[in-house]
Structure formats: C-alpha cells, structure tokens
Length: 446
Image (cartoon, rainbow, N blue to C red; front, side, top):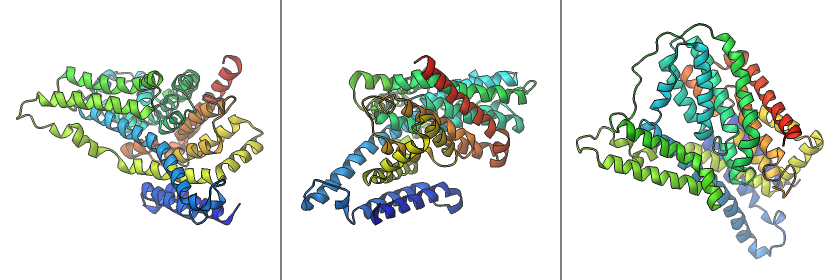
C-alpha cells in the first residue's frame, strides 16, 4: 500500500471518527463529511497516475475529472431521490394527510395499542423515511398514552418497527435506496425474500415488550389536532395523502415499466402532488391565507439540507477509497476471515451499524464487492439482501444506532442506559430471529 493510499485511509478514518463522535465534538457531521470528501480526493490528486493505468500523462487530469463526474452522477441519483421523497412527505404531513393515523390508533387496551402501533409503524416506514414515521407515531402516542413509563415502551417498539419496516422496502431506508439505485437489489426481490425476516424481527420484540404492559389506558385526549384542517377539506387531505403515499408505492412500478432511474419516478410524484396542492390553494378565498405558507415553494425550505450534504460527502469520500483499491482489498480480507460466510460478514456489519452510521458502511460494502452476473453478489444475491436487512434492522440495538432511535430519544427523553438495559437484548433477539428466518427461507424454500 503506497504512502498516498495510507494518507487517504487515515483521512477517512479520522473523519469517520469525528462523525461518530458528533455528540462529543459538537461539529455537524455534514461539515466533517464534506471536508473528508475534499481531503481524500485532494490527496488522490497529488499523484493520480499511480491509480490510473492506460492513459497518456497529459490526459490524466481529464481522466480524473471523468472519474469524479461518474461517481458524482451515481451519488446524485440517491440525493435527488431523497430530496424528492422528503418534500413529498413534508407536503402530506403539513397539509393534514396523516390525521387518519391518529384516529385509527384509539383503543383502551394497552396491548392492543402496542400491536396497532407496531404494525402501523412497520407499514408506514416501508413507504416513508424512518425519521418521519417515528415523529408521526410519537406524536400519536403523546395523545393516547399519558404515562411516560408506558410511553417509552411504546416508543422503543416504534424504533424497532421503523427500522424493520424500512429494511425490506426499496424506498424504506437510505441504505435500501442506495442498493436499489445501484441495481444490487430489485424491488420485487427484496420485498419477496426480506419481508418475512423483517416481520419476525419486529414481532419477536413486540411479544416480549407486551409482557411489560397490563391493564387499560386512561381516556385518550380527544382534542387531536387536525393539522392542515384550516386549509383543506377532509376530501382534499385524503387526496393529498393517497397521491403522496400511493405515489411513493408507485415509484418501483414506474421504474419497472420505464427502466428509468428511481429518482425520475419520485420527481414525477412530486410534480403531480405540487400541481394538485397549487390547484387546491388557488381555490381558497383570498382572505384564507393562514396556511399559504404550506405551499410547496415554502415547504422546500424545510428540507434537511445538512442531511443531503452529509450523504454527498460520505458517498464521495467512499468513492475515493474505491478508486484507490482499498475497498476491494478489505472485501477480500473479510471473505478470507469468514471463509466466505455471508451471514457472518453481514451479521457483524449489522451489529456495527448500531454504533456507527449505516450509510458509509453500506457504501463501503458496495465498493468492496462488485456486482456479478450470477451468484451471491448478483442482483438480489444473498449478500445484498442480507446487507439490506442487517444494516437496517441492526440499528435498533442501540438507541443512537438509527435516525428513528435518535428522534425518539430526543422527543421522549429516553436515556441511553435505560434503552441498553431494557431494550437492546430484545432488539438483538429479534435481529437474530430475522437472520435465522432468512436462512430457513433460502435453504428450504427459495
């Protein structure tokens, strides 16, 4: 390994450590990721000739520009997809599209509510991003459950169900979006073969957690806020919901029908929803301006740009490691150590994802193992499907291991220690149960 390659690896490791220790350094991880991206490629440019072969010396700079643009193009498909999906969810939420979720959860039985919360979270997180799903469900819980000791049990299940629901859906988690964009998994394949393991990873913890809940709930707060009700009628809010959520479900079908990249489908749904809401607002009376700030042009400012920039930085930094051959070498080492056992490799990656961000982990794996025509590394191969499951579900083992956990931690003031003591082992049992279920499916059915 050359001195430059070692320098690039050191820069990446230092940046990664700062990202993992964001709560200690107080420096936004997006800033660190962007700096890491620039530093890695700057070191690469000191002597790019040692990495690029078969190119005339005077054409090296042009070759590097082509390489960076190729990686940037691949990264941009994920970024545009995320921006479009974030905007769609924001439109639906701000205009009252999720009000029905709050209404459908009402019950007196604590255990009945637990199962309703579990399955509703699981379903929503397969369509929406985990962060939005968690926020919606925590807001529902605040209206229905008065006791904080009970509510944090429900919130813990929300974390587990959100991560499990996102693992089997091509649009349910950033990592599955990345794998889908690279054609490493297909929508039909990952749903068919990872759905049942994901359900198992949610049901086992739910069965254990329900033993901690007994009796009935106090009467729920009937004054559930109808966000967006002051602007649109109930019919209009339902139209927005079905256009937004139904549109997200349609994106995989659109890709199948047209063979266009997924981000094109997401932009189609965004444009249709944008036009529809503009028409709705156009027919409001001129003095009804209370909700005009919920128009799409204003909601675009709500998009979490720092998250988008974080993905840009981390994915482009990982692409530099890929270009210098580090990821290929690491992949070969992992195969040798595990003797080619994909369950061990992806299982360990899943556990690590509960400690560090799963986005760079999955990005690294995509660089380690090239897509093959057939076998375990082909589209919908065992490795990629296990990676989608493990990277998604593994984050439930620690409350800081996923966006859903961090959101619930902040909203419900759940301590790291409480979660680790009461929930970590439960999430781990569910995680192993899902992996075992996948093994049984691949061994005896598929």
